[in-house]
Length: 257
Ligand SMILES: [Zn+2]
Image 1 (cartoon, rainbow, N blue to C red):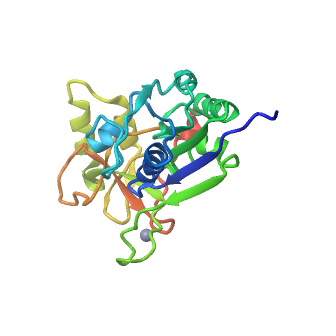
Image 2: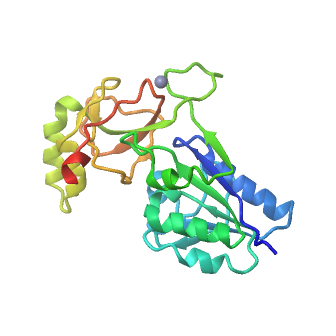
């Protein structure tokens, strides 16, 4: 008899577009309506905790699910957890895992006959597709895009904000003062200092666009309103932008290869 292979569904898009909500809703439906056994996996050291101010796996909505935390750089525990007659494995924030191991886990699960719901951001703040999505996108049976509106859109228009723009909440003209503040901290963050040092100006807000040095997670909140007051702040925020409005930050990754 031919072995059954699982179905991969990919929930992707921008921040705050509702992809995690959709992936977890689907898992909840299968659990409660179809009485299937589902498993939710999330990366340990999840940046979501920083983004949401919440520790549990919870989309920015009311759907919550019991989840299992596996190390972001060694997620193979998920294969063991899924052994016990699990029908569906939902992987939340899959872009935060190291891409090779999590892609291997997904293929392992599918080969074992488990269905997989993959929740994954589409682009990092440099406008590059996340490697895990690049590795799996051609294997997905269905790819469901979830976007938020860009601020250039009118209410009611179909959301097209697929990019996540990372912004430091300090006007570019006060960059030097911010660097002084960052360096004077009791525990300076060398990564943030480097990103700000090489930052450019955001033409839409006049704030600092931190530099980019490859696909990486930078913890920040999802901004509702950017602070455009003339203050020096080390707060970093993500804003949703469409292709037209997104500004590519200065790319340093070429120097690091
Ligand atoms: Zn726009």
